[in-house]
Length: 411
Image (cartoon, rainbow, N blue to C red):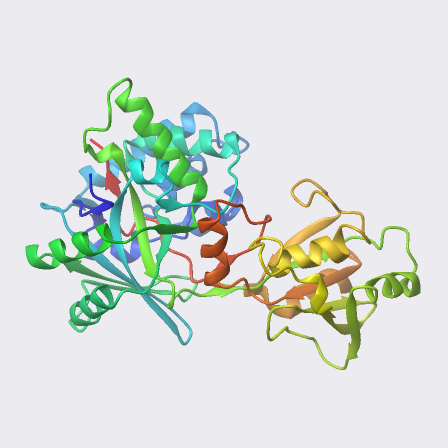
């Protein structure tokens, strides 16, 4: 089995593409999905969030929800809204957000290589979220949510991408959030073989986003294979979009805290100064390099620089900014030692800007906020290479992949 392979994708026919393409299933709650799909009968949300077509209040994990998704998928195929390509292809996928563009490869990646950690992870998964995706994939008999992967920049692949995307794309749509999605087909056998062989020579791929989708694909493959070894069937691969590490965009993933853990402001700042240099700022502060943090408290912004002796050199997890802030401030001073479960902390994606942080505090909902420098792609790969796990909410990738542009059929 090869690390990746081409596949015959299920795609919207040209006249329906704009109507089908939808945000990823996990960035919207049920009510938001219902609103986004209103008046749009062919939105892919009817497949990825099918509870919107059932009675309000139904659990998204009800068996009827998965059945409705499969029914909607088959209806869209029968109506000619979605059609499977006649041969196995690779696809080139461009995302454009404001002045940022990234072009990646849509492929099917090997579950065997995921299981052996050649496709490397950096997050824990939750069994309940895995269970949901297992039921969804198995009932649809398709993978509709792509896993976001990255790989170390390769000149052969980049040269081919540049060559093939100089032509007019077969898909060029602007979604309702302003993100542009473009698609090209890689049809020539020589190009397909070059891509397959070049990736086969790579030591590793890295999951950027989609740990639950990839873990679920592995579980579905094991269910379907039973006692047999993988036989190179469609279910032995999972849907991915892969971008070179040099083109990926990670935004900051910031923190807001409900209280000062029974400290008054003066005592709190004194404790912070034990491990950070603290400087009052006149404007909202956005860190410009690792080891630097912004803090918003009582209508004032501060710049925090962690003391250099606090930064370990040989631990790829402990030296992350999210770890440093937790280990030297949030845990020892604010008493939040389990950010996955503690209700006193929340996380704000950098797409909302510093205004989003400030608004949470000014409203009185939260007491203070921290802005962080974005985790770097090199940090993510270092953690994965060390078989370690990042703290929760370490990365926020933008722009987001669309659901519905290309799906992977398993039968």
